[in-house]
Amino acid sequence: MSHGRIISIFGGRFPGEKAAAIFEDLNARSFAARGCEVIVLAPRRFGRSDSVASPYRTVYLPTIDLSAVPLVWSVANYIHMFVFGLSTLVWLLRHSRHSDTILSNESFPLLLATLVRGRTVYEMHDFPTGLIHHAMLRRVHRVIVTNAWKQRALHARFK
Image 1 (cartoon, rainbow, N blue to C red):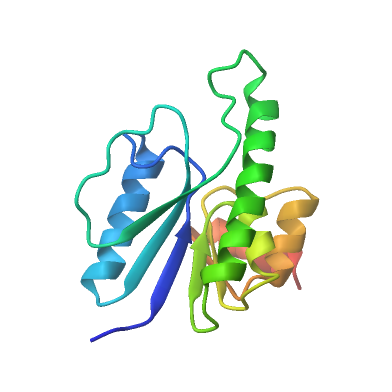
Image 2 (cartoon, one colour):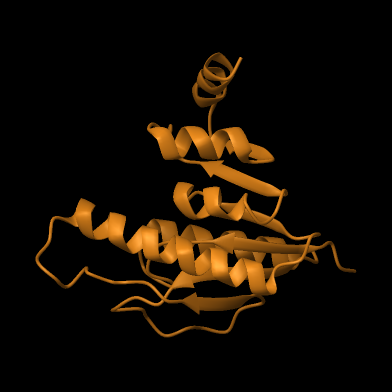
């Protein structure tokens, strides 16, 4: 029984040994186990470990990976996330369906995804700040929060 298609946007090295990559893998496996077709959009990055068999599909998108270049990480990460966000937008324009649900905790790629699809879900791990976060929160269909104080803060911010 199919329950729809979930496209999950993950901006880090995937698969990987860090908690965020492990969480992404487990999240995608859980949705797949419940009958959803799952596609994980991840950047093609240096040091990506080999893929293991999984019940979901991973699509690697172009980015500019400057992790090996001696730049300040925040600058390198902004460049990476900008290019990955644009790659995600192009992929969604070409391959997504109106019935898809787009899920992510990556603000910029998800903001761009809201331009293509209305069923977007932001998984809030850190309380967002800044213009991109504010615009994204105004446009997403749903927000999943991980604790009650974030929920209260969101309600206070967007009354």
